[in-house]
Amino acid sequence: MLALPVMAVWLTGCASVFTSYPAQADKWMVSYQNGQTEALVTELTPKLEDNDGLLYGLELGRLAQLGGSPEASKAGFEAAFLRFDQIDEQAKLRAGAAVSGAGAMLTNDNAIPYEGKDYERIFAHSYQALNYLKLGDAEGAGVELRRANLEQTVAADRRAKEVDKAEEEAQQQDVDLSQHEGSFAGLNQAAGRVKSSFQNAYTFYLSAVFWEASRDYNAALVDLKRAYEINPDAVFIEEDIRRVQRRMGDRVQAQMPGRDEGSLVVLFEQGRVQPKREISLPVPTIHGAFAVAFPTYDPTDMVAAVPLTVTDADGAGVLRTQVIAEVGAMAARSLREDLPRMIVRQTLRAATKYAAQKQANDASPLAGFATNIYNLVSERADLRSWLTLPMYVQAGRSIVPAGEKQIMLSGAGVNQALDISVSPGGTTVVRVITTGGVPVVETYRL
Image (tube, rainbow, N blue to C red):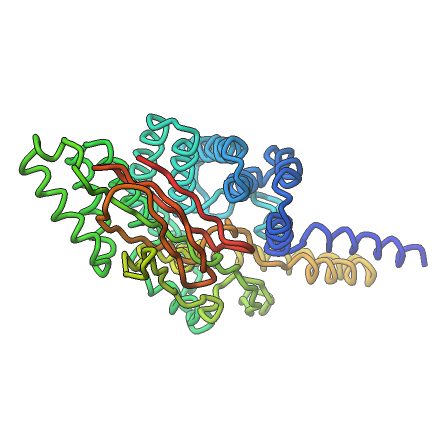
């Protein structure tokens, strides 16, 4: 009879180990909404040393930035970048099996330290650049923007190799990748909204705004063209390209401050990226089918984009933002690209668990029962991702009269007046965030 209470304690421990990551992120978001940014920094900082320190660094960086603590945010992102660098070094040394982590073979993918996604790396560098701008360090901001853009170039080569390697591994292990295609129809639908899981028009546009304000028109033009290539529906980017080209054609005039006008750039981060959901699918093994948990995205969790409208004090229209990055769709496409490797890993894990259960059954009924319960409890999909990112990033730009003025921001949970200052020939950036709770509104003068 002693085995039953011991097993109850063991199962309770299992349940705590496999707590859903989205539930943790929800708790942190509630703390942020309640104005407890300092407590969040205190809670998350020790976690930077954990196996999932990379993910905690990203969440810390984002939440501290939303809470108005750029130094704490900067430290969180720096910790995440250190983990990314370590992961890259390990990848060079690793022989490269598709299955990594012995613990994951007996439990689930949550036992593998979180390694981040390409789109998360790129966003982290962009947000770090904004931290440097807030702290008055333009040089540091420029470095981070260059790193963000470089990551997009590196990711293209890395991602192609990873996809090819996963498909090769599937052939070697004789795993049919098409067997579950119908089960991921929703994921495919969400992923199909973007052409790439990492190419980010927002990062290119943000850097273009910075370079133009720094009078580096050639760099600004290059990044504007990159942003427009990714998102040709953003008409205002095409207008920016023409304006910068005119400035380059008359450099003496272009480098002089405008007499009575300046640029107003509005960046709008709408909503919160959707969490993954868990589905259970039968995976065939040599001993029979075994139920395995997979992560997926449901397109119904992706709210519609709503533009932000900016008007002046007289109610006249100044600008209306347009979507330049669909973060939710990028996350879905990233997961879709990971599926081949995931299916291989899950198939091998199912066979391992089935074999362990068979051995336990042969040893004793109690051992077989305990192993069966463990397999059921431990079969959890990996739902980890950077969950304080926005669902969409939108942007807009307008040339406005210089001076002190009041503008009205309205749409998608925002309805407020904002006093701004626009320098002659200068650039004022207004950043609006509606990730959770009261909208965050920040201004940067470049």
